[in-house]
Structures are given as structure tokens and as C-alpha cells.
Amino acid sequence: MSEIGEGIGEEPGKEFAELAARAEKLDAADELAAKRAEFVLDEVVYLDGNSLGALPAKVPGRVEDVVLRQWGRLRIRSWEESGWWTAPERIGDRIAPLVGAAPGQVVVGDSTSVNVFKALVAAVRMAGEGRDEILVDATTFPTDGYIAESAARMTGRTLRPVTPAEVPAALNDRTAAVLLNHVDYRTGRLHDLPSLTAAVHTAGAYAVWDLCHSAGALPVGLDEHGVDLAVGCTYKYLNGGPGSPAYLYVRRDLQDRFDSPLPGWNSHADPFGMRGDFTPADGALRGRVGTPDILSMLALEAALEVWEGVSVEAVRAKSLALTDFFLECVAAHVPEGRVESVTPVAHGERGSQVALRCEGAGDVMKALVERGVVGDFRHPDVLRFGFTPLYVGFADVERAARVLARVLAEVP
Image 1 (cartoon, rainbow, N blue to C red):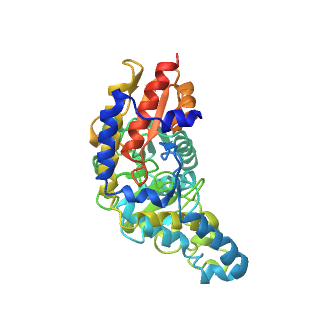
Image 2: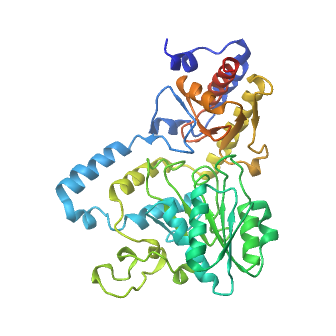
Image 3: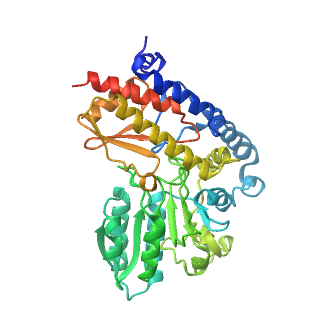
């Protein structure tokens, strides 16, 4: 029997039987269970959707049509006849309800890093010359920090890294903009977007949020909470595919003041006029730059169809139930002292992942992957498991904890 078979295919022992039976009942009652059939999956327990989402089943056929018919036969005509030209805002409107935004405020294109740069520099420009400091989440994904440092140099501002908990006390009349992550990529901690945004606004500054680890996993409420600018990737919980284009949210009442540091012909009010001077387009289209990546963008559009008929609230409820059940299974069966959860227990502070600190985490994750449980490793000692409610079930959770327990019993 293969090692994947040994990890996934075997029946649970008596010590796991009760949890396995509960998992079966939870899966039978799961209102999202049918969504699993809309993805290309196998017997592997895939808990790395917080790095790369699984392939939605409609995407291969759609990409084939884009390549063979739209590009192959229609060629240049597809910019109009196939809707290529309007794809960035059309797909943005499909993402908008998943992040709590009304139409006309989200545009798709470029990478998360590029959009962070656009948003942060635009926020500083809106804040004006009297505000000379940028606050950045000290625990952020490294690229956000690199971009923030570059934006500060370019705009002549001072960059001050602080933890999200330190933001309210760090704000003052010098603060121009604050760049924060909604969910910490290492620990899965969910930061308080409503209260932190309100604190930033009270100080007269602008809030820029990175939603990479929250969009598609939990309610965000951009409009409800008055977020100024937000960015996010689409290849994690939105399942858009490797390197799929990111998105930029610009709150409607700020759009006429959004001064992008990367003006391009696609964001010009008259893109085909080929004028020497730049006049920005109206609305969120100011966030466009150059020619959009049509192949990746239309693959993303197909991927987003799995969200039809799904509420983000139902996704969040299942996410919390999955992570609760995983923590319970781990506590019940992993040898005491072998792992420590660094993910908050409180629902209001948890994203859709569980991070376990573990000695020899790199080797442990390799062993898990060999046995058909795919998570990922974060230096120096973290096992990271992401739970995508559209295709992860409770039986997957029980199996993952069971295999983890057995790996830890074997790995020194």
C-alpha cells in the first residue's frame, strides 16, 4: 500500500472512531457539502488553500474556449466581442460582494504587491503634505513591508512598523496612512478591522487593508466599516489559480481623489486617444494600469462561478466549525506537548487556518504530505493548515489530525 493510502485510506482505529463518526454526521448536515463536486480533487486531504486554492472544475473548459475560440479564431475582435476590455471591472464586481462592497469599487489586475503600492501611495497623497508618517503592520507578510518602505522613501515619509494592537496608541496628527493585514499569514489571527479602521479615521488618516488571507473565508465588510482602500490576491480562498490577478478596492467617495502612482494607458479617460498628457478615468478604473492579463483573468472569472448561491456568512460558520473540530481532534489524539496552537481560540480573533508550533516542523510536514495530508511549513517551526469551506469537509479534518498524531508518534 502506498504511503498516501496508509495515511488516508485506512480505517481509523478505536481511539479515533468517535471523532470519525461525528465527522460523518457533520458532513451529512453540511449545507456547503455539494460545492465540493465543483472542484477537481482527489483522495488527498488538501489543507493548503490559504496558499493556492484547488482547481474549480469549470476552469479548464473556459480556458480552452478563451485560447482556441476567443484568441484562436476571433483574435483581436475578442477585446469587444468577448468582453476582454471590460474584464477588470466586470470581474471586480463579482468579487465585490465577497468583500462587502457595492459594485463599481473593485478593479482586477496586476499583483497584490503592485496594488499595495498603488493604494498606499495614493493614500499618502490624499493625506497631504502635513502628514509625514506611514504606519505598517510589523507582523505583515514581508512584501507588504518592502512595498511600504519603498512608498515611504518615494513620498518623503517616515515608516514606522507597529503591531496591530499598537496602532491606536501610535496614531497621531502626523499619520498619513496605515497598512494592515486582516489575517496574519503565520498564525491565522484575525485583526479587528472595524475598530482599527475607526481609530485610523479618528486620527484623520487613511486605512489600507490587505485581505489576502480573509477574502473568501469570512465577511470583510469594506463598505459597512468605511475602509478607504483594500487589496487582495485571488489565488487563495478565491481559487483563481497560480499567479491569478489581484484586485484593488477604492471606496466610492474617494475615487475622484485617487491619484495612482502608476498611471497607464488603461487608466486614461481616453485610452485610445493616445494623448501625451494623462487624464484619469472616472471611478475604480483609475486603478488599472496596462493591458490586462486576459488568460489568467478569464480563468479567475470562471473560478468565481463556484460562489453562485453561496453566502459568505455560511462559509464563515463552516470555517469556524472546521477549525474548532480540528483543534479538538488534535487535542484528543496528538501526544501531549508535541504541538502548540498559535492560532487564537476565540472566534472573533481567528481566520480560516490553524497554525501549530512543532519541533522539527519541516520534517513533520514532509511526512504529512507523503501520507496525503497537504498543509505547509513556515520557518522556523510552524505547521500551517488552511481550511477552505467550499471543498474541505469534516472527514478531511479528522483524517488530518489522525495522520498528524501518527506522524508525530514516529518522528523523533
